Length: 319
Length: 169
Image 1 (cartoon, helix red, strand yellow):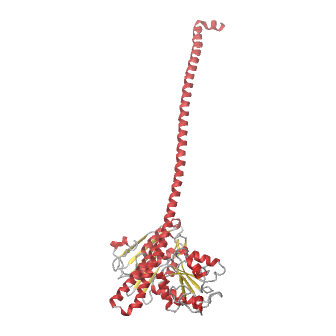
Image 2: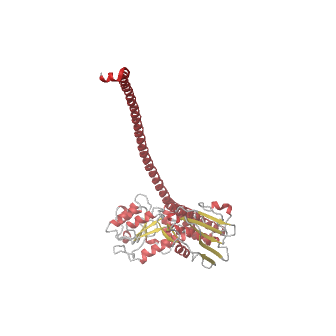
Image 3: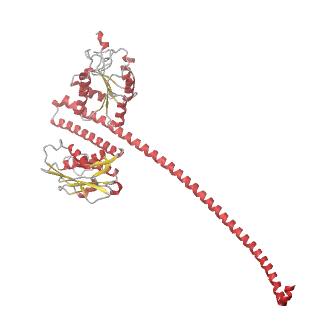
């Protein structure tokens, strides 16, 4: 009371409301706090529910991913099995072509010849010509079958890539044509070639086909020129060209050159089945490269192929 | 003649396709070898012949100097015949030449793994076919020294056409 008396009546008035206010405020605060707490709890509950929902959703999503993964793996396994069986079928088909189609051909040729041997002297010239045509046709079919088999093998053969010295490979391949080109004048213009990363045996087949074409389509020239070189400037890939001064081709049909059994010249003009360039394209494609050609009718042809350089060409073109 | 049931053939041709038999004999005829050929038509018959059982129980003793074996045949194929021959100490010395239409390499590897003595792809071209068969015939029947348990080549031969043993000489 001493304090009250010293503070006067005003202070008393002030004192009461302060205490009241404090209590009221506290009460209010408590109520508010309770409300707030309730709100917070509700919010937390909501957040928890949300979180639980999200966790549930995430778990669901994860389960879905796992399911999709399993499904994908299954699908890959199925596809692989399908591919394997397709491959096996293809091999069985090749085998059948190789074995079962060759036998009747051998018989046609064999018995045509036996007939010619037995009855030859009694046969007219026309009959003999017919027999010769039968033999020629059967022989040609034999060649087509062999070519088709080679083509199929070229697509299936396992690739063994290594550093290939193209200079050496070109020289080696040209050696194969010595017998065939005996008595012909062929000027060889060989430029230095780089090393490439490729399957040597398959690349040799590319060169055999391209050189054989150059030799064949220049056969009507008194002096044939064959030039082999590397197109400068390319870094990501090595571009090789083989140019000849032979019969060339109509550039209008250039897109047909690399098709299976596609020919731009008649067999009477130039022999062949039309599988060579198809093999070239298939082999180069398997290396990730490209093939193309330029030519003019009677003005020679240039065939190009590219082989990608390892490391995008950073260390390429070195010998 | 008494010797007739003891007629011995030098070359055993195992071939199911009569057209190939005819062509093979035509090729060998040029070198007077066709009369040294005995023909059987599948692997089962070849084994009967080699083991002298069934209808071949009465054939003369001795192994052929060479077996020309087709690969693809009904019942028992060429590879199976080869496996049996090369697994038998009494037969494994007989040279076996596989004649096949197939150029496919898996076959080649398998035949060599089982001890084939030669593997010949029958050429489609007639002249090449004749040459190949003639070279084989001459080499195995005349040039090569056969293993000691082979039938002697000096005995009378029957014609190359398919004749059951013990009949006609």
